[in-house]
Length: 351
Image 1 (cartoon, rainbow, N blue to C red):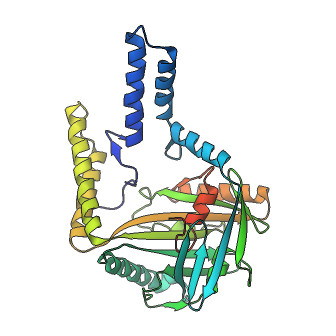
Image 2: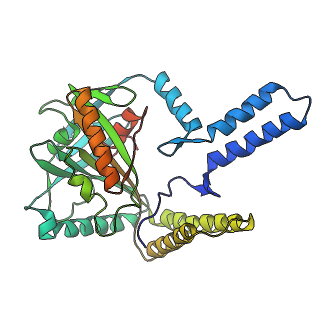
Image 3: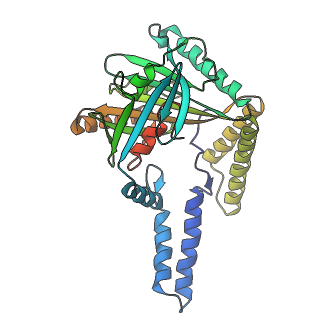
């Protein structure tokens, strides 16, 4: 069946829940102001503001969400600190939250796309996720591909009690390289700007992949980004949902979308090929989860670094165009750069 749009934002008759609530309440206030002579102008202003807050702005955000992001950006401190410490084979990372994990480096053996080991590695990580889904509590692991213009390294961050798949070797010091810390330095200060971060003499900009559904079926989802002429770091975070919760989420998604489809048809809207495909995809997912496959929450981040603001703009524009041509849709994260940087770190301390 393939991938569809992300179902992280649940929708009701084509709109997200908070949009539906704002539209219903806003219309109610405006109508009350129109029909009731005793209503003040303030009621109409509040109703119109709610309707305006439901209007889509950019990157899937509404005007109301953009306003909330802007308020948080203005109110919070611009400075944040990242700390990394080694405890034997374990690594403790603090960035808003504490997380401990072990770091493993992929043993590269030439071009993976020619040797077929990329398929083997992907299958081993899939088996790791399937095994984790059987536990009562879910697990979180992340894979990080770092490109520093000289060489490319791949790191896997796993919980301490989880053994690595075959082909991965323990390398604790690689964490410092992936995070961008010099050898022997255990902390990093970050200065947040609206569209980028300043860290240790470098400028950083983080993008989040929002949609994979336009990637051609003959290509890997992130293959084109790894071949991008613009050097960037890629972080793939996988949150494995525990078995019982996965069954509930998968069945609820089918019920929710099916109910939405029935409501839309009863309101006079026809069933589109897009809605049919969405229901089929969710039904297929429910069947796979019932058969023992894992249900995953996946997040992909791209980090661009540069020594100057002009170079950062140039690299970011090039990466944006390349991602669009590859079928990926990115989010810019204006006002969320510090938060996204913490979330994309190994182990996911910001999750």
